[in-house]
Length: 162
Image (cartoon, rainbow, N blue to C red; front, side, top):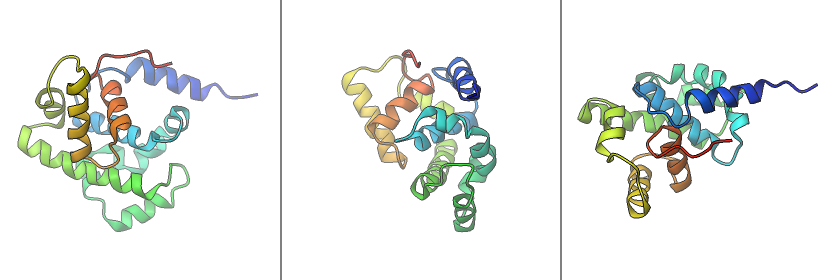
């Protein structure tokens, strides 16, 4: 008999996280990073490993992840409980470093993301411009990953996520 755990996790994510604005920089970083890891994979696969990702990436604490060096990357790559993609792991570390710079300049990552990148619903050229801005700042943030992160983090109006 199949476990319903992946469906329960997905339902929890859809009800508690998806489409809602984060108020904590580390939480917003986690949503971003899970989007990075989800590229080319299913949400069930990523959400089923959420706790393992949180453990491997020190609770998605931006300062801790930004300070991860090559030994930490090698350790994470050995962790069979997560997605062991070196490019995605290194992208998350790089993105944490960028976020620290944004925090220094703007006071908080959430403040920059929800305020400095514009407010309200984005359409056409505005969305495309923001996707380009995110791609220029962050690694592994192509247009589709950026779009899904914008939806997941409540930056764009929430579509159905079933």
